[in-house]
Length: 58
Image (cartoon, rainbow, N blue to C red; front, top):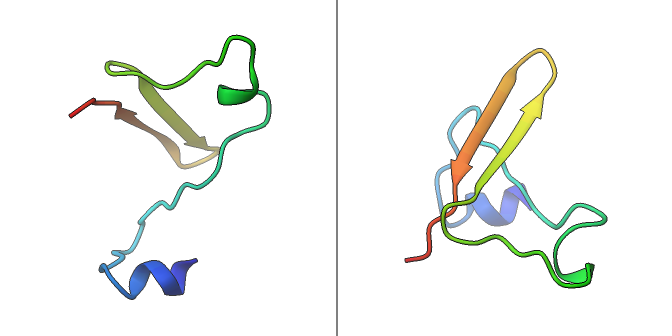
């Protein structure tokens, strides 16, 4: 994955690559729960901190 991505873009030190969908969320739920404009996605690594990104419908 890293080789593929770095073939078309520069990956700076500290770049975070996220893939997939965590178990129990999203499309598989009834009704489906999907990201929408205005939502925020937060990831956290113990001892490092959090990264929060807004979701925008462009």
